[in-house]
Length: 278
Image (cartoon, rainbow, N blue to C red):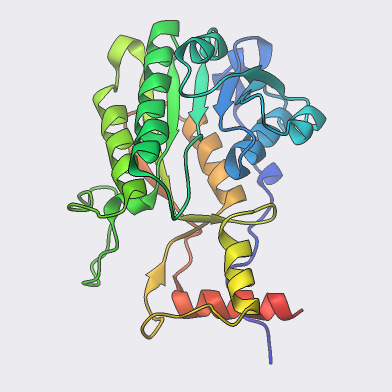
C-alpha cells in the first residue's frame, strides 16, 4: 500500500534567510545565548544560528557532550540554570537569550520539576534583567493548556489547564507565569513559544520510545485514536525561534508552533509503524 504522507520532514531551515540587518550585534559582537544547548532543540538551534553566520554561545553543564557544538563552531559557557553566577556570566553582553533548557520526562519528582523548570526560568529571567539582555525567547509547551476533551479549538488566548495533576505541566505553567510577569522589566522583552511534541532526526525522547513499545507489541492506542495531536518538527520550531528573534513585534506575545497539519493519534502511530518496517 502507498505510504501515508503525514509526519513528513518540512523544508530545511536553511531556505530561510534571517534579516541580520535588524540585529547587527548578532553578527558583529553581542550575539545570542542558548540554554539547554546540548538538548535536542537547543543543539539544533545553536547549530542553525551558527550556520547562518550569527554569533552564538551555548550554556552547558560540565557533564554534557559538547562534540556537536564544537563541530558547529559554537562557543560554550559552562553553567547551569540553577547556578545564578554562571548564568550572569553567560548572558552578559548578549542581545538575545533562547531559554530551551528544562526537565522533560514522563516520570519524576515534583520538586525536581519545579526546581529546574520554574526556578531555573526565574534564574534566567533575573540574570537577563541584571545583565541588560534585550530579548528573551522562552520555550514553553502546549501542555500548559492540558488536554481539552470537548472538541473545542484552542489558541493563544485559551486559559491554562485547571488544576493539572502532572508535575511537568504544573512547572511549565509556573514558568510561563513568571515570564509574563517579567515582561518589559528593566527593558527586557520576552516572547513565549509553545511547541507540541517535538520530533525529527536526532530525537532521543519522543519517537524512540514509541518505536521501542511497538517492537515489543506494547504500544496502545487509547480510544478510537481520532483525537488530533500537536506535533512540532524540530526544524519548524527552530524556524519559529529565528522568526521570533527577527521580528520586534513578537515581544510580549505567546505563539503556538506546530507543523500546521491536522494529524490524529492513530494516523501518527500508523505512520511511525510504516517507517519502522522499512
